[in-house]
Image (cartoon, rainbow, N blue to C red; front, side):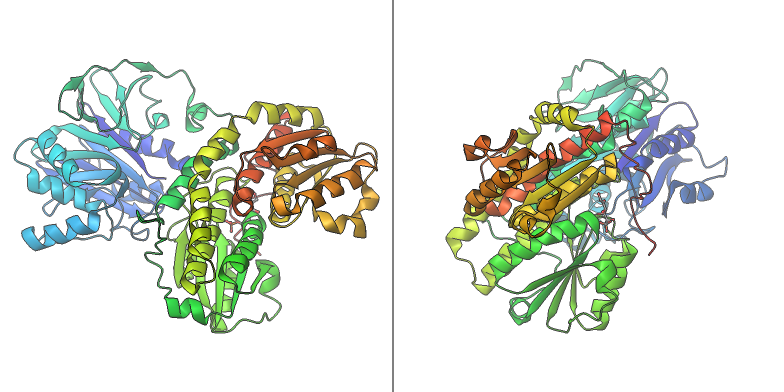
Length: 609
Ligand code: F6R
């Protein structure tokens, strides 16, 4: 995710800004840049890749100043590249800005600036419009120009701006993107995140929505939306840098579990229009294309594959088209039936998984249309696909995937609904029913996360087990696989998932006194059958933790514990059902003293075969 750092002091801004950017590296980024007012001009240097690439081009001692702004970019509009990196300048670099967030109406602004002011845009980013807007409004007062620019912008933003003619200040503004001002003595900081500042300051002002802040070396002045000065209490940061990166959570995995409502919300809202239609902006799939596909092939690895298991059932149900699914490492070596009428969907958080990439290339070679569902903008999978459906989970740092999975599920639903509506295979009432339940998910996930302590208690009770089973039917079966993978990869418990109806064909032989089984029973139309499956294993002495929707209490009669998820239609329950499994896995691993964020033998991105 993008990071912002700004410094105003007496000297050596370069070192402070770069140091702050390095503290934000853990969040993931694809390029970095810095702007410094030097001798009446703003000097901008930026480079794709790691901060060390940037350092190579800003090494000269004379390239320094008392004021500076810097940025690490996580690409959204425009691929990772030098030119798309921040800071962005206006035409003559008399203004420079860094920006986190999205300017929704940037196209409109861009067209207006080109038409009326002949502005020459250098990058493909939405952010560049901000620099030009401020430049156009600038008349010797940066604060006033920033306020005027902001009045033209829609979207979410944290922006820091500097002006060559006022080289002693930074003006920053925020709306729906975080910003903190760090209070120093003879210097001040501004940043998107507290970890960037902690080496230098412990006292900060938390800037609130729609506030503007002017920083000079001796002063931080905050203004509200009406332009009135605001008095803000000082916030004393007591965490160390490591805890601050995790925003107070003990591990990234837990932080990311809690970020799911936001990721789901972002992934949904970017694709749902005001009239509740789904937009596939940037995806060039026409009605004719959709009607022409005779098969969908979903290919991925690990957790992304598990999202595909749900995607298969959802797309088949909604778009009435056969969907095959395979793990990428198998697909690529088995001469699959793929042709120019196949829609190939590759799912990948990192977009760098070698097997998925190789499978994609194989499908492409056979003429398939390639659509990828990817979290990392500009990654290899994204670049090599015909179209990309981005998840908006934000950077995922813990090796065990959580928020990427639930946002991948959201993409599967949106795709299924879009294809089904386009083909006329679902009626309007059904479309709106599913959409309404999707939109309710962020709140429902938030409500479910409040059960964390209860689930942690269950985890404490069972954390010594060396074997755990996960069973479910229909969509729950796919979620069982994900629950099982989460548990085994971070706690090293031997866990096993199986479709509940398949148990009796062999695996039930393993059921004995105290065998621990997670039974997912969130599908109303399969509920009774699941309850019968639970009875069968209870009869063999198993311990059962049921997961069911609120109000479906029948399972209490057979299960030892029941975790209830908020009520919803069957289709969307995987997004909710997986949450208790993630929390359970997390707390079991914690009880067992495992290295949760970096489990043994695993890497976040598997770029080898
Ligand atoms: C499990 C996990 C892995 C990944 C898999 C694919 O928690 O994270 O199973 O899902 O390695 O990675 P991506 O999605 O980056 O292709």
